[in-house]
Image 1: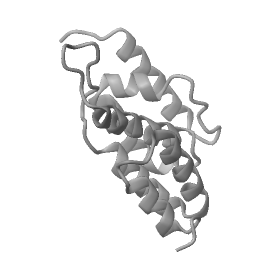
Image 2: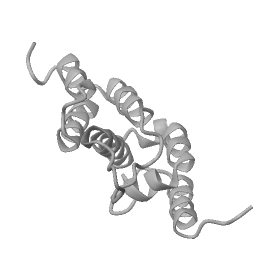
Image 3: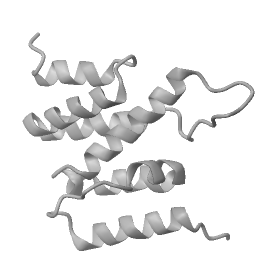
Length: 138
């Protein structure tokens, strides 16, 4: 199976031992050649465990695999945010980001959002970032 086929790229992204940067690169390529499959694959990575950011600096640090899985989630979110498919997956991505402020804090800063994204989506992301920085109490 050639390395740049959609199936090969999905297999690369799905493999747990693949580094987050390689996941991001494969997702960018997949979104370019098969946008729908790329979006589904990225959302799949984004919806995986761990659902909360692993703590560091503890007596027993979480394993490298836990942090790698977290960074893979972050990479998938960043790729989707910078991708032209964002309008199509915005609701799902927003749900994931708003579910976990740590994920939103790790994904959103520094991302250049595709200019085709509606102003309402950009405003919602800006509000989410502001909420993550200054959480309100119920």
